[in-house]
Amino acid sequence: MSALVAEMAKLPAFVRRDWKIALSYRAVFVGDIVGLAMQILVFFFVAKLVDPGKLPTYGGTVPTYLAFVVIGLVINLTAGVLLYQVSAALRQEQLTGTFEALLATPTAGATLQLGSIAYTLIFVPIRAAVLLTAIAIGFGLDLQLSGILPAFVLLVAFLPFTWGLGLVAAAAVVTFRRGSNVTGVAVTLLGLISGAVFPIALLPGALQTMAEWNPFAIAIDGIREALIGGTGWSAAGSDLLHLLPLSMAGLALGVLCFRWAIARERRRGTLGQY
Image 1 (cartoon, rainbow, N blue to C red):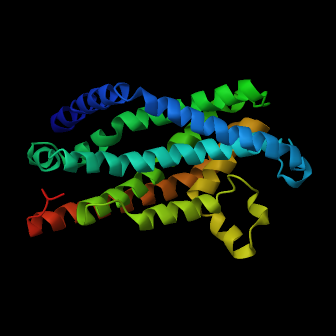
Image 2 (image 1 turned 60 degrees about the vertical axis):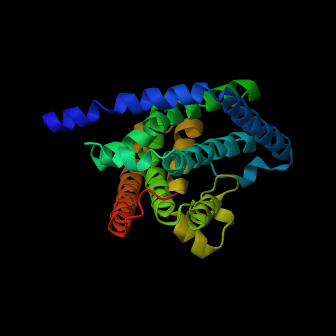
C-alpha cells in the first residue's frame, strides 16, 4: 500500500509540468476554440437544410440538427485530443532525450503512462463541459440540466477506450519513432460509424451492427439521451454497462501493446533512439 501511495504522489509533478507547458502555449487554446466555433457555425447553417423529422428521438424529444451534431462533434473532438496527447507526450520525451531517463528512474511504468496524460485526463472532461455549455448558451440549444451528471459519467467511462487507442499509438512511436497512421485510420472509421454527424440508421445494415459495439457510438448516443432527452440514470446505467467493458478492453489492449514495445526496444538496446 505504501508503494502505491508513493507512486500516486508522483502524479502531481507531471500535472504541474504539463500545466506550465500549456500556459506557455496559450495560442493553442485560442486556435482550438476558434476551429471548433467555425465547425459549429457551418453546421448551424447546414441545420437549416435538415428536416428534424429525419433525426432519431431521445426520450421522446425530437432534437434540432444543431443539438444533435454539436454533442457528436464535441465528444469526437474530446477523444481526438486525448488520443493525440498520449502519443505526442511520449514523442516529446523522445525528442528532448528524457524518455530513457524517465524509464531509468524508480518509477513504475504504469505511473509514467498515467502521469504523461494526467493533466489531459483532468483537462479534457472540463474542456468538453465548458464547450458544450458555451455552445448551448450561444446558440440557444435546449439541453436538459438533469442530464449533465449522467452525461459527464458516460464521458468519463468512455475516456479509457480512447486512452487505450492512444497507448497503441504510443507503442507505435516507441517502435517506429513515429505516430501510427493505422491508429489514425481506425479512429476515423470509428468516428464515421459513431453517428456523430448523421444518424446511424442511415448506414448499411452491416455497419449499423458494428456501431452497436462501437464505444464512440455508445457514448455519443448515451450522452444525447441524457442531455437532449433527459432520460436520467436508468438509460445512462444501461449504456454504462455496455460501454465500460469495451472501454476496459481497449485500455488493456493499449497497456499490453505499450509494455510489449518497451520490452522489445530494451532487448534491442534502441530505447534511447529517436
